[in-house]
Image 1 (cartoon, rainbow, N blue to C red):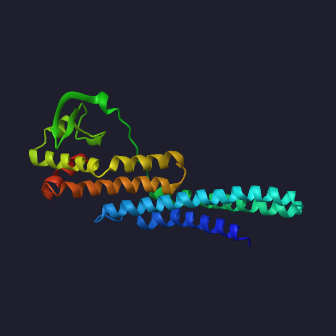
Image 2 (image 1 turned 90 degrees about the vertical axis):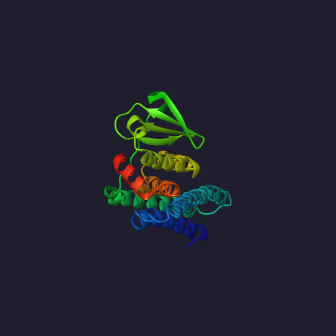
Image 3 (image 1 turned 30 degrees about the vertical axis):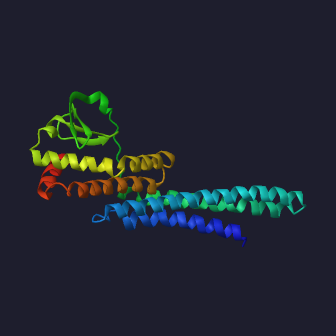
Length: 235
C-alpha cells in the first residue's frame, strides 16, 4: 500500500481513537487535578484537529499527484483508483464518527446559555481585589465572571460575608486562571464541528474542570465549609 495512504489511515484511526476513547475513559475524571485535566483535554483536541487537517492535506496532494501522473501517460483507471482511495478512507472515517456520535450521544449533554449581562446589571457596584463587581437584576442565586467583571444577583450580594467571599474568590479564579479564553476555544470547537460528540464532551469537560480549578483557587483564601454552603445555593 502507498505510504501516503497508510499515513491517512493512521491519522483517521487516531482521530477515531480520540473521539471514541476520550469521552468514555476521561469524562468525569481529574476532579483532584482539574488543571491537569484541562491540559490533557486541550492536547487531545488539538491532536485530533491537526490529524484531521494533515489527512485532508495528504488527500488534496493526491489530486495533484494524479494530475501529473495522467500527464505522464499513466493508465487512467489506475490513476483514478489511487486518486479516490484517500477520499474513500476519509469518508469511511466520517461514517464511523457519525455512528460513534449516535451510540455515545445519550451519555452526554452539552449546555449553553447566553445572557446580555450588561443590560441586566443595575447601577450598584463594588470592587473586589481590583475587579468590578456588579449587581444583576435576576431572581435567585447567580454569579458569573465576564470581561474582567464579576456579576452577582441581588440575593448573592446579600449572602453572609464568608459565603459571599467564597463566591467572589471562585469567580476571580475564573478570571485569573484564564478560563474565559479556554471556554472561548471550546465554544469555537462547538461552532466549527457541532456534530462531533468529542467537541461536545470537550466543552462539557472543560467547563466542569474549570469549576473545579476555580474552587481550588477560592480555597486558598476561604474555608471549605463556606464554599460548600455557597455552592449548594447556586445549584
